[in-house]
Length: 492
Image 1 (tube, rainbow, N blue to C red):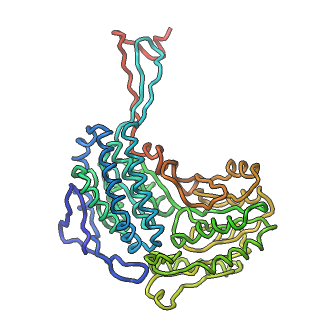
Image 2: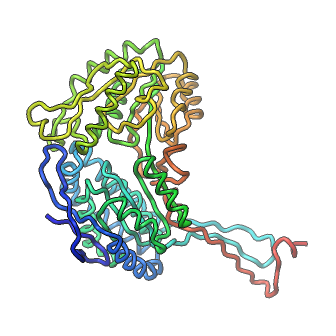
Image 3: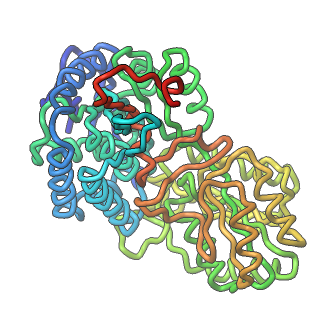
Protein backbone atom coordinates (compact mmCIF):
# COMPACT_ATOMS: atom_id res chain seq x y z
CA UNK A 1 0.00 0.00 0.00
CA UNK A 2 1.28 3.46 -0.94
CA UNK A 3 0.09 6.31 1.26
CA UNK A 4 -0.23 9.54 -0.66
CA UNK A 5 -1.15 13.02 0.51
CA UNK A 6 -4.76 14.07 0.98
CA UNK A 7 -5.75 17.65 0.23
CA UNK A 8 -8.53 19.53 -1.54
CA UNK A 9 -10.68 16.44 -0.96
CA UNK A 10 -8.49 14.22 -3.15
CA UNK A 11 -5.65 11.74 -2.79
CA UNK A 12 -2.69 13.49 -4.34
CA UNK A 13 0.52 12.00 -5.74
CA UNK A 14 1.93 14.95 -7.64
CA UNK A 15 5.49 14.86 -8.94
CA UNK A 16 8.00 12.11 -8.43
CA UNK A 17 8.08 12.05 -4.61
CA UNK A 18 10.12 9.59 -2.55
CA UNK A 19 8.57 6.90 -0.36
CA UNK A 20 9.77 5.22 2.82
CA UNK A 21 8.71 1.98 4.47
CA UNK A 22 6.29 1.81 7.41
CA UNK A 23 7.26 -1.08 9.69
CA UNK A 24 5.40 -3.01 12.38
CA UNK A 25 7.55 -2.56 15.52
CA UNK A 26 6.37 -5.90 16.88
CA UNK A 27 7.89 -8.02 14.10
CA UNK A 28 9.55 -5.82 11.47
CA UNK A 29 6.87 -6.52 8.85
CA UNK A 30 6.46 -3.83 6.20
CA UNK A 31 2.92 -2.47 6.40
CA UNK A 32 2.99 0.27 3.77
CA UNK A 33 5.05 2.90 2.03
CA UNK A 34 4.49 6.56 2.81
CA UNK A 35 5.25 9.60 0.71
CA UNK A 36 8.07 11.88 1.87
CA UNK A 37 6.66 15.17 0.71
CA UNK A 38 8.35 18.44 -0.18
CA UNK A 39 7.69 22.14 0.31
CA UNK A 40 5.78 22.12 -3.01
CA UNK A 41 3.30 19.62 -1.55
CA UNK A 42 2.81 21.85 1.48
CA UNK A 43 2.21 24.88 -0.75
CA UNK A 44 -0.52 23.04 -2.67
CA UNK A 45 -2.20 21.80 0.51
CA UNK A 46 -2.14 25.25 2.11
CA UNK A 47 -3.64 26.81 -1.02
CA UNK A 48 -6.50 24.29 -0.86
CA UNK A 49 -7.02 24.93 2.85
CA UNK A 50 -6.97 28.69 2.44
CA UNK A 51 -9.54 28.57 -0.38
CA UNK A 52 -11.84 26.30 1.66
CA UNK A 53 -11.54 28.27 4.89
CA UNK A 54 -13.39 31.34 3.65
CA UNK A 55 -16.51 29.28 2.93
CA UNK A 56 -16.07 27.04 5.97
CA UNK A 57 -15.97 30.02 8.35
CA UNK A 58 -19.39 31.11 7.05
CA UNK A 59 -21.00 27.75 7.85
CA UNK A 60 -22.91 28.15 11.14
CA UNK A 61 -21.01 26.53 14.00
CA UNK A 62 -23.83 24.06 14.83
CA UNK A 63 -23.68 22.88 11.20
CA UNK A 64 -19.91 22.50 11.41
CA UNK A 65 -20.52 20.45 14.53
CA UNK A 66 -22.82 18.10 12.63
CA UNK A 67 -19.78 16.89 10.68
CA UNK A 68 -18.01 16.07 13.94
CA UNK A 69 -21.02 14.11 15.14
CA UNK A 70 -20.84 12.07 11.94
CA UNK A 71 -17.07 11.63 12.24
CA UNK A 72 -17.55 10.40 15.81
CA UNK A 73 -20.26 7.99 14.70
CA UNK A 74 -18.01 6.56 11.97
CA UNK A 75 -15.09 6.21 14.36
CA UNK A 76 -17.35 4.33 16.77
CA UNK A 77 -18.55 2.07 13.97
CA UNK A 78 -14.96 1.36 12.87
CA UNK A 79 -13.43 1.29 16.36
CA UNK A 80 -12.04 -2.25 16.25
CA UNK A 81 -10.58 -1.81 12.79
CA UNK A 82 -8.90 1.45 13.80
CA UNK A 83 -7.52 -0.13 16.96
CA UNK A 84 -6.06 -3.05 15.00
CA UNK A 85 -4.35 -0.72 12.53
CA UNK A 86 -3.05 1.44 15.37
CA UNK A 87 -1.54 -1.53 17.20
CA UNK A 88 0.13 -2.83 14.04
CA UNK A 89 1.88 0.40 13.18
CA UNK A 90 2.58 1.81 16.66
CA UNK A 91 2.91 -1.32 18.79
CA UNK A 92 0.79 -0.53 21.84
CA UNK A 93 -1.33 -3.41 23.09
CA UNK A 94 -4.78 -3.77 21.56
CA UNK A 95 -6.57 -2.83 24.80
CA UNK A 96 -4.74 0.50 24.78
CA UNK A 97 -5.40 0.87 21.06
CA UNK A 98 -9.13 0.59 21.67
CA UNK A 99 -8.84 3.11 24.48
CA UNK A 100 -7.04 5.59 22.26
CA UNK A 101 -9.65 5.31 19.52
CA UNK A 102 -12.34 5.83 22.16
CA UNK A 103 -10.56 9.02 23.19
CA UNK A 104 -10.93 10.28 19.62
CA UNK A 105 -14.61 9.33 19.62
CA UNK A 106 -15.13 11.17 22.90
CA UNK A 107 -13.38 14.25 21.51
CA UNK A 108 -15.57 14.25 18.40
CA UNK A 109 -18.78 14.32 20.41
CA UNK A 110 -17.44 16.73 23.01
CA UNK A 111 -16.21 19.28 20.48
CA UNK A 112 -19.39 18.87 18.45
CA UNK A 113 -21.22 20.11 21.54
CA UNK A 114 -19.13 23.27 21.40
CA UNK A 115 -20.80 24.05 18.10
CA UNK A 116 -23.79 25.29 20.10
CA UNK A 117 -21.64 27.08 22.65
CA UNK A 118 -18.37 28.71 21.54
CA UNK A 119 -19.32 31.17 24.24
CA UNK A 120 -18.23 34.79 24.23
CA UNK A 121 -19.20 37.43 26.78
CA UNK A 122 -21.58 40.33 26.98
CA UNK A 123 -20.74 43.13 29.41
CA UNK A 124 -22.24 46.48 30.41
CA UNK A 125 -20.79 49.52 28.66
CA UNK A 126 -19.62 52.52 30.63
CA UNK A 127 -21.61 54.71 28.21
CA UNK A 128 -25.37 55.03 27.78
CA UNK A 129 -27.06 53.42 24.78
CA UNK A 130 -24.02 51.31 23.98
CA UNK A 131 -23.68 47.51 23.86
CA UNK A 132 -20.41 45.61 24.42
CA UNK A 133 -19.54 41.97 23.74
CA UNK A 134 -16.72 39.63 22.77
CA UNK A 135 -16.94 36.66 20.41
CA UNK A 136 -14.63 33.91 19.21
CA UNK A 137 -13.51 34.17 15.59
CA UNK A 138 -11.68 31.54 13.52
CA UNK A 139 -8.04 32.26 12.72
CA UNK A 140 -7.73 30.67 9.27
CA UNK A 141 -5.41 27.84 8.22
CA UNK A 142 -3.75 25.98 11.08
CA UNK A 143 -0.86 23.53 11.01
CA UNK A 144 -0.91 20.39 13.16
CA UNK A 145 2.24 18.35 13.88
CA UNK A 146 1.54 15.14 15.79
CA UNK A 147 3.72 12.36 17.27
CA UNK A 148 3.72 8.60 16.74
CA UNK A 149 2.85 7.49 20.28
CA UNK A 150 -0.81 8.63 20.15
CA UNK A 151 -1.47 8.87 16.40
CA UNK A 152 -5.27 9.21 16.72
CA UNK A 153 -5.95 10.79 20.11
CA UNK A 154 -3.59 13.74 19.81
CA UNK A 155 -4.66 14.38 16.22
CA UNK A 156 -8.30 14.63 17.34
CA UNK A 157 -7.38 16.89 20.27
CA UNK A 158 -6.04 19.34 17.71
CA UNK A 159 -8.15 18.92 14.57
CA UNK A 160 -11.64 18.72 16.09
CA UNK A 161 -11.55 22.08 17.94
CA UNK A 162 -9.99 23.61 14.82
CA UNK A 163 -12.87 22.31 12.71
CA UNK A 164 -15.71 23.43 14.98
CA UNK A 165 -14.14 26.87 15.38
CA UNK A 166 -14.26 27.46 11.61
CA UNK A 167 -10.63 26.81 10.63
CA UNK A 168 -9.16 24.49 8.04
CA UNK A 169 -6.01 22.53 8.78
CA UNK A 170 -2.87 20.90 7.42
CA UNK A 171 -1.89 17.82 9.40
CA UNK A 172 1.61 16.37 9.36
CA UNK A 173 1.50 13.01 11.14
CA UNK A 174 4.63 11.24 12.32
CA UNK A 175 6.40 9.27 9.58
CA UNK A 176 6.31 6.15 11.78
CA UNK A 177 2.49 6.14 12.03
CA UNK A 178 0.93 7.45 8.80
CA UNK A 179 -1.67 4.69 8.48
CA UNK A 180 -3.88 6.19 11.18
CA UNK A 181 -3.87 9.50 9.31
CA UNK A 182 -4.87 7.62 6.17
CA UNK A 183 -7.75 5.97 8.06
CA UNK A 184 -8.89 9.32 9.45
CA UNK A 185 -8.77 10.90 6.00
CA UNK A 186 -11.11 8.18 4.74
CA UNK A 187 -13.47 8.93 7.63
CA UNK A 188 -13.38 12.65 6.81
CA UNK A 189 -14.31 11.75 3.24
CA UNK A 190 -17.14 9.44 4.28
CA UNK A 191 -18.50 12.04 6.69
CA UNK A 192 -18.77 14.49 3.79
CA UNK A 193 -16.41 17.09 5.24
CA UNK A 194 -16.09 19.77 2.54
CA UNK A 195 -13.03 19.64 0.32
CA UNK A 196 -10.04 21.47 1.73
CA UNK A 197 -11.15 21.53 5.37
CA UNK A 198 -8.96 18.57 6.33
CA UNK A 199 -5.62 18.19 4.57
CA UNK A 200 -2.84 15.68 5.27
CA UNK A 201 0.75 15.98 4.10
CA UNK A 202 3.12 13.14 4.94
CA UNK A 203 6.83 13.65 5.40
CA UNK A 204 9.65 14.64 7.69
CA UNK A 205 9.62 17.40 10.25
CA UNK A 206 12.66 19.05 8.70
CA UNK A 207 10.99 19.27 5.29
CA UNK A 208 7.22 19.33 5.75
CA UNK A 209 7.10 20.66 9.31
CA UNK A 210 9.46 23.52 8.54
CA UNK A 211 7.55 24.41 5.39
CA UNK A 212 4.31 24.59 7.38
CA UNK A 213 5.83 26.80 10.06
CA UNK A 214 7.37 29.17 7.52
CA UNK A 215 4.31 29.40 5.27
CA UNK A 216 2.74 32.87 5.55
CA UNK A 217 -0.80 31.52 5.18
CA UNK A 218 -0.53 29.08 8.11
CA UNK A 219 -1.49 31.22 11.08
CA UNK A 220 -1.26 28.69 13.94
CA UNK A 221 1.09 25.79 14.66
CA UNK A 222 0.10 23.16 17.21
CA UNK A 223 2.95 20.78 17.98
CA UNK A 224 3.31 17.72 20.21
CA UNK A 225 6.73 16.13 20.53
CA UNK A 226 10.07 16.44 22.26
CA UNK A 227 11.11 19.54 24.17
CA UNK A 228 14.17 19.92 21.96
CA UNK A 229 12.14 19.96 18.74
CA UNK A 230 9.41 22.07 20.32
CA UNK A 231 11.94 24.75 21.23
CA UNK A 232 13.00 24.92 17.58
CA UNK A 233 9.35 25.12 16.48
CA UNK A 234 8.78 28.01 18.90
CA UNK A 235 11.88 29.83 17.69
CA UNK A 236 10.99 29.47 14.02
CA UNK A 237 7.33 30.26 14.62
CA UNK A 238 8.28 33.35 16.59
CA UNK A 239 10.27 34.69 13.67
CA UNK A 240 7.09 34.51 11.60
CA UNK A 241 4.85 35.91 14.38
CA UNK A 242 2.69 32.80 14.52
CA UNK A 243 0.65 31.56 17.41
CA UNK A 244 2.48 28.40 18.52
CA UNK A 245 1.01 25.81 20.90
CA UNK A 246 3.52 23.32 22.32
CA UNK A 247 2.96 20.09 24.26
CA UNK A 248 6.34 18.50 24.93
CA UNK A 249 8.22 16.24 27.30
CA UNK A 250 7.73 15.02 30.82
CA UNK A 251 9.63 13.47 33.72
CA UNK A 252 6.63 12.49 35.74
CA UNK A 253 6.70 11.21 39.30
CA UNK A 254 4.51 9.13 41.56
CA UNK A 255 4.82 10.13 45.22
CA UNK A 256 4.25 7.20 47.61
CA UNK A 257 3.79 8.33 51.19
CA UNK A 258 4.23 6.21 54.31
CA UNK A 259 0.44 5.94 54.75
CA UNK A 260 -0.27 4.90 51.15
CA UNK A 261 -2.20 1.83 50.05
CA UNK A 262 0.89 0.12 48.61
CA UNK A 263 -1.00 -2.45 46.55
CA UNK A 264 -2.93 0.35 44.85
CA UNK A 265 0.27 2.34 44.39
CA UNK A 266 1.95 -0.62 42.69
CA UNK A 267 -0.95 -0.92 40.25
CA UNK A 268 -0.74 2.76 39.46
CA UNK A 269 3.03 2.68 39.01
CA UNK A 270 3.06 -0.36 36.72
CA UNK A 271 0.28 1.02 34.52
CA UNK A 272 1.84 4.47 34.31
CA UNK A 273 5.42 3.29 33.83
CA UNK A 274 5.03 0.35 31.48
CA UNK A 275 1.79 0.97 29.59
CA UNK A 276 2.58 1.91 25.96
CA UNK A 277 6.06 0.54 26.85
CA UNK A 278 6.72 3.78 28.70
CA UNK A 279 6.31 5.83 25.52
CA UNK A 280 3.93 8.42 26.91
CA UNK A 281 4.65 12.01 27.76
CA UNK A 282 2.70 11.30 30.98
CA UNK A 283 4.55 8.05 31.78
CA UNK A 284 5.79 7.58 35.32
CA UNK A 285 9.58 7.57 35.15
CA UNK A 286 10.24 8.45 38.81
CA UNK A 287 8.82 6.96 41.99
CA UNK A 288 9.48 9.20 44.98
CA UNK A 289 8.90 6.93 47.95
CA UNK A 290 8.99 7.52 51.70
CA UNK A 291 11.86 5.69 53.40
CA UNK A 292 9.49 3.86 55.78
CA UNK A 293 7.84 1.92 52.94
CA UNK A 294 10.59 1.81 50.29
CA UNK A 295 11.64 -1.82 50.82
CA UNK A 296 8.06 -3.06 50.96
CA UNK A 297 7.18 -1.15 47.80
CA UNK A 298 10.17 -2.61 45.97
CA UNK A 299 9.16 -6.14 46.95
CA UNK A 300 5.58 -5.64 45.79
CA UNK A 301 6.73 -4.12 42.49
CA UNK A 302 9.04 -7.06 41.77
CA UNK A 303 6.29 -9.54 42.62
CA UNK A 304 3.81 -7.94 40.23
CA UNK A 305 6.36 -7.38 37.46
CA UNK A 306 6.80 -11.14 37.17
CA UNK A 307 3.23 -11.28 35.87
CA UNK A 308 3.82 -8.81 33.01
CA UNK A 309 3.64 -10.40 29.57
CA UNK A 310 5.63 -8.92 26.69
CA UNK A 311 5.03 -9.40 22.96
CA UNK A 312 2.94 -8.46 19.97
CA UNK A 313 0.19 -6.10 21.07
CA UNK A 314 -2.41 -7.89 18.96
CA UNK A 315 -2.26 -10.76 21.46
CA UNK A 316 -5.02 -10.06 23.99
CA UNK A 317 -2.91 -11.53 26.80
CA UNK A 318 0.09 -9.30 26.21
CA UNK A 319 0.44 -6.35 28.59
CA UNK A 320 3.55 -4.64 27.16
CA UNK A 321 4.30 -4.22 23.46
CA UNK A 322 7.40 -3.10 21.60
CA UNK A 323 9.00 0.32 21.47
CA UNK A 324 8.65 2.16 18.20
CA UNK A 325 11.96 1.38 16.45
CA UNK A 326 15.61 0.32 16.79
CA UNK A 327 16.73 3.87 17.42
CA UNK A 328 14.43 4.04 20.44
CA UNK A 329 15.79 0.72 21.71
CA UNK A 330 19.34 2.04 21.54
CA UNK A 331 18.43 5.27 23.33
CA UNK A 332 16.62 3.46 26.13
CA UNK A 333 19.48 1.03 26.64
CA UNK A 334 22.00 3.86 26.69
CA UNK A 335 20.19 5.25 29.74
CA UNK A 336 20.46 1.89 31.47
CA UNK A 337 24.22 2.11 31.01
CA UNK A 338 24.19 5.70 32.25
CA UNK A 339 22.24 4.68 35.36
CA UNK A 340 24.76 1.99 36.20
CA UNK A 341 27.66 4.38 35.68
CA UNK A 342 25.99 6.92 37.96
CA UNK A 343 25.82 4.37 40.74
CA UNK A 344 22.14 3.52 40.73
CA UNK A 345 21.20 -0.05 41.66
CA UNK A 346 19.54 -1.97 38.80
CA UNK A 347 16.70 -3.84 40.49
CA UNK A 348 15.24 -5.56 37.42
CA UNK A 349 15.33 -5.43 33.61
CA UNK A 350 17.87 -3.27 31.84
CA UNK A 351 18.22 -5.24 28.63
CA UNK A 352 17.02 -5.60 25.06
CA UNK A 353 14.82 -8.70 24.70
CA UNK A 354 15.82 -10.99 21.85
CA UNK A 355 14.47 -14.43 22.75
CA UNK A 356 12.27 -16.24 20.23
CA UNK A 357 9.86 -14.05 18.28
CA UNK A 358 10.92 -11.00 20.29
CA UNK A 359 14.11 -10.90 18.23
CA UNK A 360 12.09 -9.72 15.20
CA UNK A 361 10.71 -6.67 17.01
CA UNK A 362 11.84 -3.84 19.26
CA UNK A 363 11.38 -5.02 22.84
CA UNK A 364 12.93 -3.69 26.03
CA UNK A 365 12.62 -5.31 29.43
CA UNK A 366 10.63 -3.29 32.00
CA UNK A 367 13.36 -1.73 34.12
CA UNK A 368 13.57 -0.39 37.65
CA UNK A 369 16.53 1.38 39.22
CA UNK A 370 16.62 1.94 42.97
CA UNK A 371 18.84 4.02 45.23
CA UNK A 372 18.64 6.83 42.67
CA UNK A 373 19.56 10.34 43.69
CA UNK A 374 17.46 13.22 42.34
CA UNK A 375 20.31 14.79 40.36
CA UNK A 376 21.23 11.67 38.37
CA UNK A 377 20.60 11.88 34.63
CA UNK A 378 18.18 8.96 34.76
CA UNK A 379 16.14 11.01 37.27
CA UNK A 380 16.32 14.24 35.25
CA UNK A 381 16.13 13.41 31.55
CA UNK A 382 13.21 12.01 29.56
CA UNK A 383 14.03 8.43 28.53
CA UNK A 384 10.70 7.66 26.80
CA UNK A 385 10.80 3.95 27.51
CA UNK A 386 9.96 1.42 30.25
CA UNK A 387 12.52 2.67 32.78
CA UNK A 388 11.69 3.84 36.31
CA UNK A 389 13.90 5.39 39.01
CA UNK A 390 13.08 4.91 42.71
CA UNK A 391 14.11 7.90 44.85
CA UNK A 392 13.92 7.72 48.64
CA UNK A 393 12.70 10.70 50.71
CA UNK A 394 11.93 11.36 54.35
CA UNK A 395 8.90 13.65 54.17
CA UNK A 396 6.14 15.03 51.98
CA UNK A 397 7.99 18.34 51.73
CA UNK A 398 11.11 16.60 50.43
CA UNK A 399 9.02 14.56 47.99
CA UNK A 400 7.45 17.71 46.55
CA UNK A 401 10.86 19.36 46.28
CA UNK A 402 12.25 16.36 44.38
CA UNK A 403 9.18 16.24 42.12
CA UNK A 404 9.58 19.91 41.23
CA UNK A 405 13.34 19.66 40.73
CA UNK A 406 13.23 18.82 37.02
CA UNK A 407 12.84 20.99 33.93
CA UNK A 408 9.50 19.40 33.01
CA UNK A 409 6.05 19.89 34.53
CA UNK A 410 3.43 17.68 32.91
CA UNK A 411 1.98 15.15 35.35
CA UNK A 412 2.43 14.04 38.95
CA UNK A 413 0.68 11.72 41.37
CA UNK A 414 0.44 11.15 45.10
CA UNK A 415 -0.65 8.04 46.95
CA UNK A 416 -1.73 8.87 50.49
CA UNK A 417 -4.73 8.38 52.78
CA UNK A 418 -4.05 11.66 54.61
CA UNK A 419 -6.35 14.38 53.26
CA UNK A 420 -4.06 17.12 54.54
CA UNK A 421 -1.07 15.72 52.63
CA UNK A 422 -3.19 15.33 49.53
CA UNK A 423 -4.34 18.94 49.56
CA UNK A 424 -0.83 20.25 50.20
CA UNK A 425 0.49 18.15 47.34
CA UNK A 426 -2.11 19.18 44.79
CA UNK A 427 -1.38 22.80 45.69
CA UNK A 428 2.43 22.59 45.66
CA UNK A 429 3.21 20.12 42.87
CA UNK A 430 4.17 22.31 39.90
CA UNK A 431 2.70 20.16 37.13
CA UNK A 432 -0.21 20.86 34.80
CA UNK A 433 -1.89 17.60 35.86
CA UNK A 434 -2.07 16.11 39.37
CA UNK A 435 -3.52 12.71 40.25
CA UNK A 436 -4.50 11.52 43.71
CA UNK A 437 -4.36 7.78 44.42
CA UNK A 438 -3.93 7.04 40.71
CA UNK A 439 -1.03 6.88 38.29
CA UNK A 440 0.34 9.74 36.20
CA UNK A 441 -1.57 8.90 33.04
CA UNK A 442 -5.20 8.73 31.98
CA UNK A 443 -6.35 12.23 30.99
CA UNK A 444 -10.02 12.80 30.14
CA UNK A 445 -10.90 14.90 27.11
CA UNK A 446 -13.09 17.49 28.85
CA UNK A 447 -10.24 18.85 31.00
CA UNK A 448 -7.26 20.86 29.72
CA UNK A 449 -4.18 18.79 28.90
CA UNK A 450 -0.67 20.21 29.11
CA UNK A 451 2.05 21.26 31.47
CA UNK A 452 4.41 23.84 32.84
CA UNK A 453 8.11 24.69 32.45
CA UNK A 454 9.80 22.62 29.72
CA UNK A 455 6.58 20.75 28.98
CA UNK A 456 4.64 23.56 27.32
CA UNK A 457 4.30 27.24 26.56
CA UNK A 458 1.02 28.01 28.30
CA UNK A 459 -1.47 26.58 25.81
CA UNK A 460 -3.56 23.45 26.36
CA UNK A 461 -4.91 20.62 24.25
CA UNK A 462 -8.34 19.18 25.05
CA UNK A 463 -11.21 20.68 27.00
CA UNK A 464 -12.70 24.11 26.28
CA UNK A 465 -9.19 25.54 26.71
CA UNK A 466 -8.23 24.00 23.35
CA UNK A 467 -10.51 26.51 21.62
CA UNK A 468 -8.20 29.31 22.72
CA UNK A 469 -5.52 27.94 20.39
CA UNK A 470 -7.79 27.98 17.34
CA UNK A 471 -9.76 31.20 17.87
CA UNK A 472 -9.11 34.90 18.23
CA UNK A 473 -11.10 37.07 20.59
CA UNK A 474 -12.98 39.86 18.83
CA UNK A 475 -14.45 42.68 20.90
CA UNK A 476 -17.53 44.39 19.44
CA UNK A 477 -19.08 47.70 20.52
CA UNK A 478 -22.47 48.80 19.22
CA UNK A 479 -23.36 52.42 19.93
CA UNK A 480 -27.05 53.18 19.35
CA UNK A 481 -27.06 56.64 20.95
CA UNK A 482 -26.99 58.43 17.61
CA UNK A 483 -23.98 60.53 18.64
CA UNK A 484 -20.22 60.11 19.02
CA UNK A 485 -19.38 58.85 22.49
CA UNK A 486 -15.76 58.60 23.54
CA UNK A 487 -14.74 55.91 26.00
CA UNK A 488 -13.12 57.17 29.21
CA UNK A 489 -13.85 60.78 28.15
CA UNK A 490 -17.60 61.20 27.76
CA UNK A 491 -18.39 59.30 30.95
CA UNK A 492 -19.37 62.24 33.19
